[in-house]
Length: 592
Image (cartoon, rainbow, N blue to C red; front, side):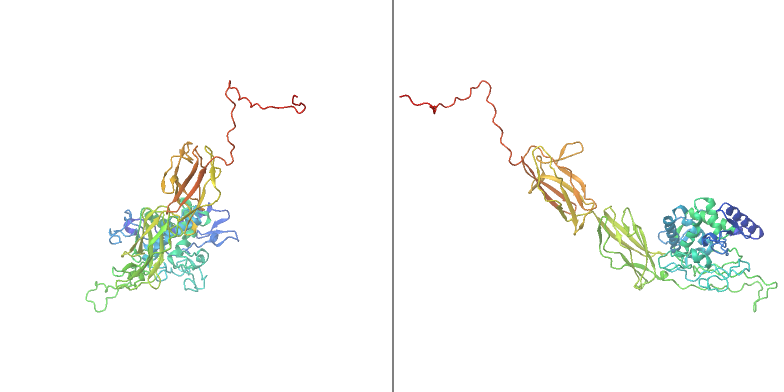
């Protein structure tokens, strides 16, 4: 492939010198106190530096890596929906499903933890390609752990760096020298501080693609690097493996994946064949996809090839050998998914669904398959999510072959919601679930106060009407409501006289729609006014869900009001004459 595209950088003294110069130049622009060692590795004079600041050997200890370069043509578009595989013959753009999921999950985590780093998942994919061929074409189990350990050569100084054992063989099984471990090829001493738990199982395993991808992301995001800046991006890649050829190879794959990629089944990824230590890998036969590549050096021909015993033709090649096949993973045995007894899925807007979806992985004979990754995906135009706000959830089947999805939480958009379950890494029959989000509702509505609501004709009510809505005893928030002044208890048409509300222009209105309860389920109506009509009137308030309450309003003159005072007689009218009656003075005596 290198000869075909003419892009292979030659190894040797020139490469070493260029690498050292490049790393030295980049190191010169970094923090004060940073220098480079004789191999171009970064060192520091600060004795208290953290391991992250003193990663002289890089993440991999400068271990060998795959040097295959991407095709010159653009990445292949998404695979056929009917087969789930790349049908164009160009498969380099495909990334095994679980491996791709791990890269994207690591990017999402770093976007939250270190937003200034701007880590693209395509960078992790590029490094994963050159370090392990995407975990040997995606040969991982349902938890993301490689089916067999991926180990680099022992770093004994014989053609490689000299790194004596630092982990007592805990990670690499070698108690004499260190070896790079796992799909992202961390040396044990680096993994000791860089390791992360990416799949939430409580362990930090370099052989797990979720753990390794998250660790690689943190490693690349240290030192305050912003990977959207080319200089910082170069520094980060060179810190992983201090070689300009490595930098160029990773950048080639990064740009390739940025132009497009797609998911392919686990175990079917294209395996690399060329390595920087001049060893050659053997591609698996078509009958054994995903067979781990051999890392043995290419055998050198004997100076005097011997004629095969019993061969009459010296040019006859030896019999072809078939690489050993790899046992099928649990995922390989899945034929279809079945609904594992999911009940009716209904919830009001804003509430959690009480029922959860479950799917069962089965073989073609109907046997349950454990340890299979099932991906539940919410599709369509909806704001309903899984608990935690995600629209995708991946769950591993239990011993009964069943995966139970996280609970759904209804959004504000009402109507149907579709969720699909599929096997990660396989294209087999899945399951589609239908859920329904209904509008918020209340089943009870009551006044919060007991004071009578009264008003004089032409005046305004001193107290506003306040109500509280509940549903099954719980607060009913954001519930729609309508308030109407009605003619009577038996006639709910709008009353044309009596109390009224005012609109924005100050005009009388006797129906209010578009009302909603607040976060505490309270509904406080605007102030009410009265015209000159006296009497008893009714205010009817109704909520979504059918809860209603009728509030009585009274318009009357105040009790004990004095009658109108007498008016003066009209001008020119003589007042009535007083009645005449005899009177005598006490001092006078009748005439005699």
